[in-house]
Image (cartoon, rainbow, N blue to C red; front, side):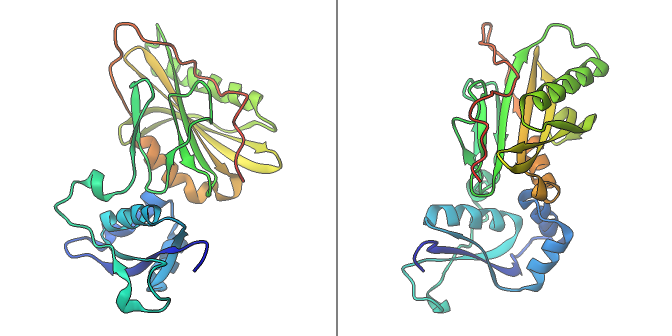
Length: 273
């Protein structure tokens, strides 16, 4: 092994004390796998699910699988190929807190206004949007998320919140190449999130992409989350994006707080294909 030296190996075996049904459901919610992908993964027995250049990245993904209840191994470049007796098993200690085992980072906003629980393979990605308080994703998989907010005075009804989300969808669609609203604002309660969600199709360079746009109100502010990935992979990644969306939580603002305008920046929206 030369470039991708560390392999995350899925064994298909459950750890003691875990429910098979719940662990399978976790594969869908955490990793965005659909029914057929999960079926193939479980049928394959021992298989390499990801290769990394750095051990820390491989161990974070292994931690996410372990948290879900699956036995995994990380095979390192310092061990001979095919020497299964030398392979390091990444069993996680059940006594560790979930935040230490899951591998995904809880990313707080730059101004402390909110936070998201990231998937194990995501990280903070500064530079996606100059107005965002959270910028995160995975460059290799072309999965991205930014969070913005702005203060509001009178949003006293679900109808007003829906109108706001609809306006955000239209505004975003007008700012990006080939932008079109493909799913209008609809109410959604997911985890800690309670608001409205819609979807947009567009192009970045020549790549078709799909956006999920979510809006909610908290303590006199409206937060807007923008998720996007390649259009061809959007349906299989929908559950992953929704799981990140559902982890969203806010903090009460201080007496004086800076406004973060909820608009997509025209610069640095480029997807790294």
